[in-house]
Amino acid sequence: MSDTTETAILAGGCNWIMQQLLRYPEGVISTRIGFMGGYGENPTEKDSGGHAEVVEVIFDPERLTYRGLLELFFVTHRADLDESVVGSLYRSEIFCTSPEQRRVAEAMIRDVDAAEHWLGKTVTRVSDAGVFWELGPEHQDYLQRFPNVSPPPFPSVS
Image (cartoon, rainbow, N blue to C red; front, side, top):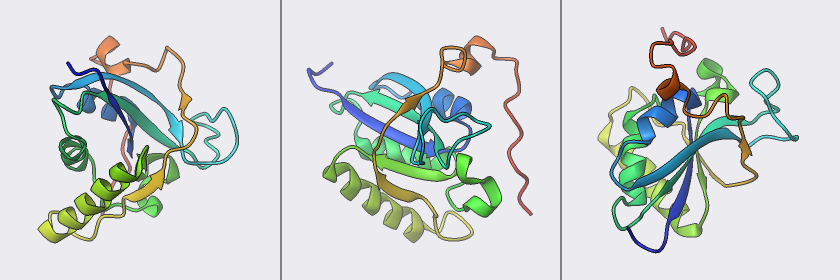
């Protein structure tokens, strides 16, 4: 492992599911879930204040590139479903911690759209990272601790 790490903060639906999917690539050091991108303090699922559910991923950039992590991010959720379908809490958003992350994220979205993988263009937002509101320990690693529990239902798409 290198002496440096990088932090990625990604919103792509239910953070229990996203944490489970983003924890496994080689180079991921740790993950934790919380909220970001809204207003107000101490958001909750019932009163999110416009925040999105996010996963913070600490990774070794010598073993996993930021672009490689974003490639996984884009195949693990429906990046073409806007907030009118999934709601603000479950929106697709990349919270950048550096100008280089923003450059990579914007290029990745152009590449995803050019590939025409989704029925429409990606609606993923690219924003600067703000305050990370960590969820309590009862929410962290939830699907690892309770593998037989079904996550909350995702809104249906017609």
